[in-house]
Amino acid sequence: MAVQSVGTAQGRNMVAGLVIVVGLAAFLHFGGAGVLLRWALRRSGHDEDLPHPDGRRLLILLPGYLFNWVAYGIAFVLLGRGLGMELGFLAGITAFAAAYFAGYVALFAPAGIGIRESTLAAFVAPVLGTEAGWVLAALQRVWITAVELLGAAAGALVLRRPVAP
Image (cartoon, rainbow, N blue to C red; front, side, top):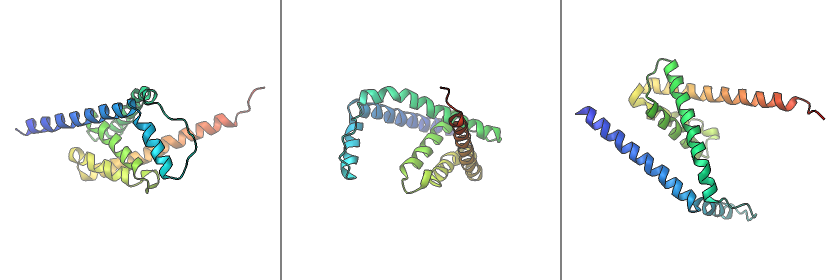
């Protein structure tokens, strides 16, 4: 009976995720991003004529962004497994992407610090336990920061090279 209810809950979560993705695709396709951008610019007192994003063009980017979040989520799951924490790919990918999004929308928190970690810990706690969830959430921040610093260092090295005439 417990397995059946977990399956039902997972099915509902998958349907909810699918509805969100389809809703986002429709929002982009029908020009919702342009309307939202123009509204935000008006509210902030800016009236510059910026390029209006075409929803169809933005929709083309969606598979790339989905691939990016899946890759990030897989790396997160592998980080946990490297530490001996058994986290499933579906749970890990969705928890990581949702927590990262929560950090993005928390504009009051620089780089979403604290928000992303607490959200991530809450999402993985049912699978890993509360303590392990907090440890993994904190370590993912260190991991992401280290990867970003390596990327910045590589970029600095490339930019320091003299340009050939």
